[in-house]
Structures are given as structure tokens and as C-alpha cells.
Length: 182
Image 1 (spheres, rainbow, N blue to C red):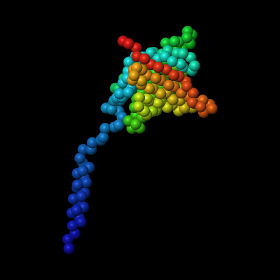
Image 2: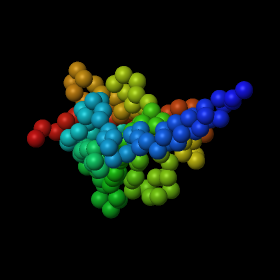
Image 3: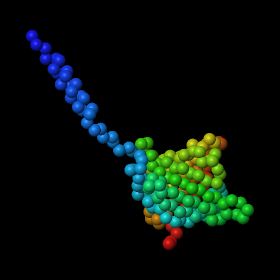
Image 4: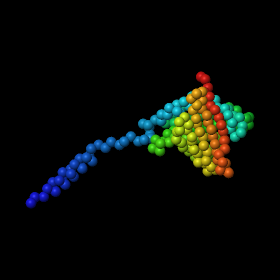
């Protein structure tokens, strides 16, 4: 009796070798140079804005410019205090909002005049309708910064909240941004 197992092994071995020799195509990574960030909600924030409202119990006004940068990976916000008091540094921040496709969430880098210690923590968020609520887990407690687009008057509402030592959420800032006409 002649065994047919040996030729089958040779056939399947050759088939496997041929399949592994075929060029392998890697799937496109979820994030990277070829995956620019496009977001129709944040597109409304691009441009120049005047921000007014209450920050830590005091009326403040800020100037804000927002533009897409770094291969359209981030919306860059340049925020400057327009009501600075003489002799004291006015508030200024550079903010980068991006999107992590692998984790399916927004990410925000907030760098301001308070230095490196306060810029270590990244904020994360998911979108809910016209709002993006960024959550920061600072060493001294959680902090929320909610960006809400108001389509009726084409403005933005920024609500910043912090949890105090007693565990209660309090308003840090409540502001409205209106577009500056060119």
C-alpha cells in the first residue's frame, strides 16, 4: 500500500511557503502623519475671539486665536489676558487640542504661565452633542473644562469647574467667546 500523506505534506508546505513569500500589506495606523484630525465642531472655533466672563470671582476679558497646526493634527489656541493689571503678568496659555483615534477620545495639552508643574497633566474627553468636556486629573484634584458651541448666536461657552477639598464641584470660570469681526 502506497502512502499519500508525504506528498500532501510537501504540497501544503510549499503552499505555506508561497503564501509567506507574498508581499504583506500593513493596515494604515489609526494615528499618524497620514491621519489628519478633522472635526466639524472644532472647526467652529477656528478664528479670532473675544472671551468675557468671570474667572475665580473676578470679571476678566481674554483674546483667543485658534488655528489648525502641525499637519492638521491639532487645533492650536493662543489665549491672552486683555485685562491684565500693571505689574502682574497677564494670563497666557498655549493650548493644543487633538484626537487619539486609537483610544477614540480628544486630548488637550494646556501650557500656561503657571509653568511645567501645572502643564504635566493631559486632559481627555469624548464629545456629547455640541460639547466637549475635558477632564484633567491634577494631583490636587479633578478639574473639568467644558467647551460648548452655541449655534444660535455662533458663540462658545467655556465652563471650568474644580472639585474642592470637601469634594464639592465649584465653578472656577464661566466665560463666553464671541467672534471678532475681521
